[in-house]
Amino acid sequence: MDSVDGKVAVLTGAGSGIGRATAHSLARRGTTVIISDVDADRAQLVAGEIQTLGGRAEGMRCDVSLPEDVTALAERAVLDYGRIDVIMSNVGVIAKGDPLEIPMDAWSSIIDVNLLGTVRVLRAFLPTLIEQGSGHVVTTGSTAGLFPYAYDRLPYVATKAAVVALSESLALYARPRGIGVTCFCPAGVMTNIVEQIREYGPSTPVQPPQIPIISAEDAGELVVQGILEDRLLVLTDPLAESMIHQHAADREAFLASQIQWLDASQ
Ligand SMILES: NC(=O)c1ccc[n+]([C@@H]2O[C@H](COP(=O)([O-])OP(=O)(O)OC[C@H]3O[C@@H](n4cnc5c(N)ncnc54)[C@H](O)[C@@H]3O)[C@@H](O)[C@H]2O)c1
Image (cartoon, rainbow, N blue to C red; front, side):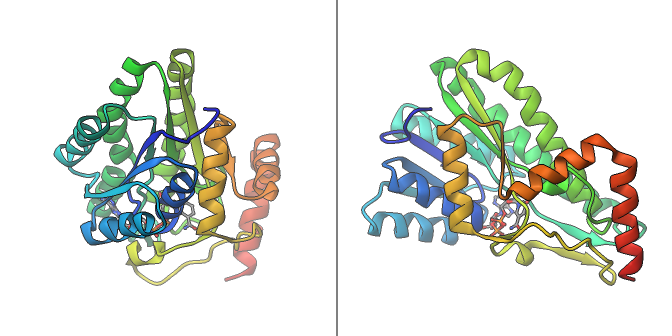
């Protein structure tokens, strides 16, 4: 997409963090943004911030675990604006604990929100983009889905790896139909994500990401650059790229070095 000026974007989980910052980045460039979040107050607050700055925005409650909410969000966008140019499926929540301690219902709920939430968004929005023959889909993955660095959040990493794979294969279908696909895979970003973490038992070691933590504002700018440059994978630091290469070149060696680090930190 050459420009986002005058376009219409819908974002999920945009009442905070990366979604909120991306909405601001888009709105600064002239995009009309529909901010959705399970927390309706947050969604309205972010829409209000953008309006105060002179941008065009509206807020709406949408829980991505509820198919009817996601369908209503897509219908509202088409009703209000007649088109959808960018859809960002951004919601991700974490359950943390020893692999033996995380209960089945936590697995189900993380998969339902992170993976099936993305699927619900794609099912609701993609038909409009395909019909238009234009648009851009952004999914939010994570470096957690690209290489192993922690065993204390298995449901999260499983869903993030699935979101990465889903996005890449979706691009096979979408690009020839004029639809861009970007999977944003941040390492650390300063957001409110810890609010959403459910803990099961004491914390376990995590290979501290040597990758620098960035601000949500920088993350939002990277997402918009990814849309403008039609990039499939957007990372937050070149070190993540180099870790992807190390992991791909020798998974055994990569795993051994991560285990060595985790053992030493116990
Ligand atoms: N912050 C990081 O370090 C980091 C790193 C890698 C990936 N990510 C990913 O970035 C995405 C955004 O996270 P963030 O860091 O901005 O977190 P955040 O908590 O600041 O924002 C997430 C928003 O999602 C909303 N939300 C939660 N459950 C929802 C649901 N069922 N339906 C709709 N909205 C819901 C929350 O109310 C919140 O406003 C997530 O997918 C996360 O996994 C974050």
